[in-house]
Image 1 (cartoon, rainbow, N blue to C red):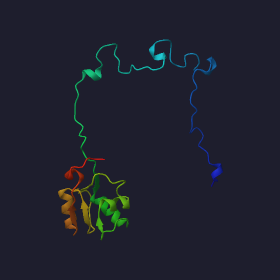
Image 2: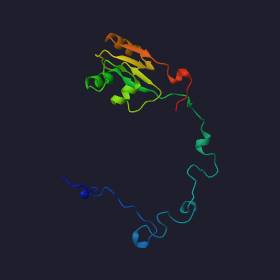
Image 3: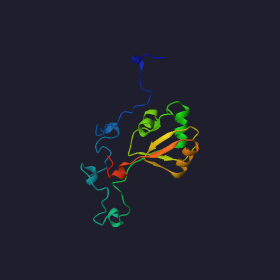
Length: 163
């Protein structure tokens, strides 16, 4: 085992950048790999979408689609993942399972607009869920295991915008 003062990168992990315009012997001297004359040999070039004055293809083609700026980003979690956390002892099946409890248990990385429970996987534990959404199959599976599902008023229902 090495000491902290002996730690170094693997051989070839960091490649030195090519220094251009440093003489003919460097292999990238004189024109520095830019060719000869013209707009692209100079700085400040902005011709990526330029087609010689012809209407560029990105302006010829019609716009398509729609991006909903009010759409909310949900935390989706399956019943199988909840059962995994209960089995691992990270979630307390006797306590109410909320978004905060799922984040604390490491099931979710961070809290978003609300939790949406999906019916994938098998749930054996009797859990009490407090979530924003739950699929019909998820509600049925939780109730079959002896638990309950309480649906909270989400940010979408209260009219708040996603932050």
